[in-house]
Image (cartoon, rainbow, N blue to C red; front, side, top):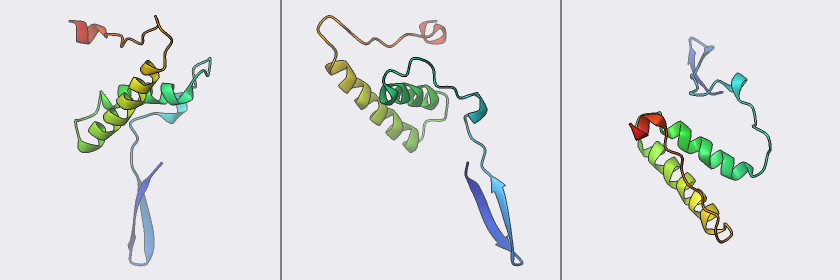
Length: 90
């Protein structure tokens, strides 16, 4: 967790910066097959719900490039397809 800290009158005051993710509910889903791929998917899920910023664009780009590399390495006849959510399909 990050905090903004400032010294006022010789005393340090720190204020926590809220996180988009509740770390208490983060659980690694079994099986732990390929953590970098799972991380790329989690990044794309997270940036899809935050405002479009330069940072979210960069994260999307990096995660998408990684997933494309995974796709290229799949055996013939196997494809990786992004599931369409109900809200996107409507």
